[in-house]
Image (cartoon, rainbow, N blue to C red; front, side, top):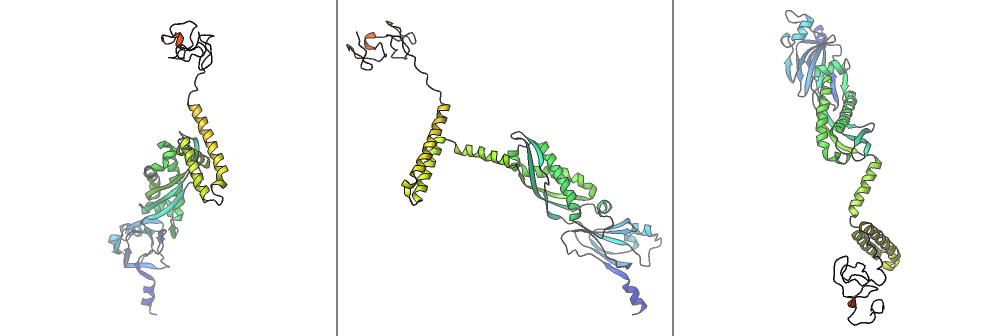
Length: 353
């Protein structure tokens, strides 16, 4: 091998990065001890940014495109290297490729329950989970604040930090919205949009931004869900009489499918229907006012045939309604009307006249 071939093998004339992974954010180009030659070709693909770093200092940044490296497009590096009249010899520099594509379907969830004061259930604990997507918006800030001098920086290296900020913002959103626990499911989109606006200012200092924040579910504690089920069951039952009839019809249908037929299931059905009727009757009795017990009439006075009020013996008019009384046609003992000229009351047997 000639000296010129050896020198050429120690120089880099093409710099590019073809990302074969789905979770790499920053990749340091492997120089393998070589130097960059004058006029080397730099290829930056879409959704990529190339950053030159000279001795730990950020230098020039290149967006998508194809570049021939000259002093004209390396102004910062030229100043750092003190190339007053351009460079004619190879140079060393670190090159980092930053992926600016969206990293989709990243999962988040509450590691611990979120405490919430609810108008219906008081203090309750909520758990939630969902997904989010993010991308790099400021590659230089990302390298300064997060990446450092590592050769590779993956999604998993920053994902946990984003999750913690997201869960904290979700807790604040639920508390500030004051949405009842029973109505949270109907407001997932609104809560997600609120969280997105709350999270991004906090991530700006890391050089990344959320593009979506999706709430897939917010679960309630078991005891709250059971209370909701009981309340729903009460609403479904509705009219107890109709519910009893429905239960009887269901029992008849099931008994017809049993080997013993209706006779085999008759006792169980009868007991169930009877219990339902007793329960319905008891509920009706509670709902309806009890009739007043009619007081016994004074001895020999009887009752008014019009309003049922007790009559004073010998009265010609009712003291309750003013009804004119016909003593001959009213039993003085029970107040029932009797045929004219009757000698005994047909209702109680009282002797008349």
